Image (cartoon, rainbow, N blue to C red; front, side):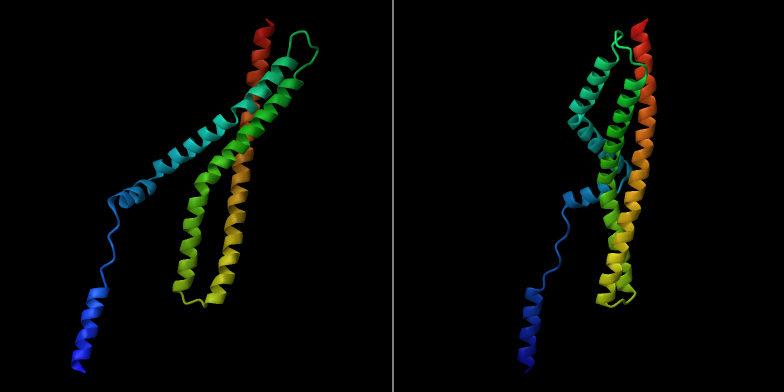
Length: 175
């Protein structure tokens, strides 16, 4: 019996290996991603990629405006208004998409933290699932409200600035 116990201890010593240490690349990645400037750079990078991919749309809006705002056409400031609203909408959508790229990882961290805290407080699994669904709904709703509000602000600012830039450019060419 004693021999049997010694054999079990030896096999558990042999089979239980210490957990592997995280690689230095993994540690470096975690350290870099925990910095605020990394998230700012990620936002700028996503925004730049989205802007470059929608460049043709922006050029087509500006070329439409150029055709409509010819000095020979009797149009007033309406083409500038239409073009500026379209440009504002494009930039608003782009800013929402870029902000979403940053918001998703942060939202996941918040959601995981809340679910883990609920689990630590001894919630049963069924209750934890129900609470997790409610929390997910609330977090997604809150994030979408914030994204829409920020996108609308960016769209409005870009539309106003675009309008004044287009009208100024049109009057500069007319002189």
